[in-house]
Image (tube, rainbow, N blue to C red):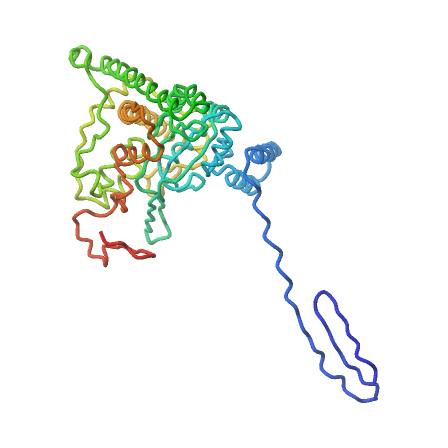
Length: 446
């Protein structure tokens, strides 16, 4: 008998026994397979501003060379992941998602921090409506994006997840939207201490102007002790209240001066709380009511909110902002913002097929949006920002989280303790088990 022959190839072992004698059948072959160890998944590239710049340069080369649509789409997705922002191929902005990393970068560069607080995530398409408009109107703007890159370290954090709504029409058509929420930009010094805040949406001109006003203080504060910084911040906001009040009186004088001159000369800044609703800090404020605080996105969310809460009727005594906006310089979107909006394929919802807007329709919609944007900007500046100035006049240091709680509770009227964000029906009978509540975990009794 011949000795056993053993062969091994590519991790699979074969063993066979052959018999010398004629007519003897060979025994069955024994087959044993070993599963190869899977290769580790490639690590995601480290997120740095330099890595983003490299990806953007590659993207520009692809665009110049006429790369096909799938290749460009893949490149844009890689850019968005690196930047931590949706549509970053247009804004070209790098965002930190860790405050500690942002502070380290700020202290190394000597630049202050611009901190965005939003509902949802800035790197997802369905973040809150305000932050989506930031991406279109502000970050995509050529001058604003350049100003931000040159002067700030950018950081964003999520206040809470954004509520999302899906409407299935049952015939293959599905509509996806987000509901409610507001966002705020905080100016922080290199040590993460609050210097100023711009609540809500501003047009590009006013946004850049508002950030420039506190930029020098934000730079200087990073070199100051906590006590000296607090005093400097309080002094800045005390003066800001005076300046904003004077500007408000000029606005009123342009519109009402001839008829209400005596009132205009002594007018104070408008109150931030323009919605009449009982127990605003302890009850779930209907989202229909909160929606009136955000002019530019109100028409996005109003139809769905009205369906959810048809029994809610809102009275808002906030003055005739439209008339004031008519006398103020109108904000305008730049060509880069308009191009990005066009890439989103806005639709004509007055047509049965919701066809894409033609150039004339798009121009008309943009013009209406610019007027609403101007109106909301004025309201945010004189009402919300005025309240922020008043809050930060305190000589004792106001912390970032304290300021954030004040803004979301008293100005945006969406306190954290309101778990449902005012989206539940207030008094109506739904006829659905648990009023339609489906929860993946236990719901705490209130």
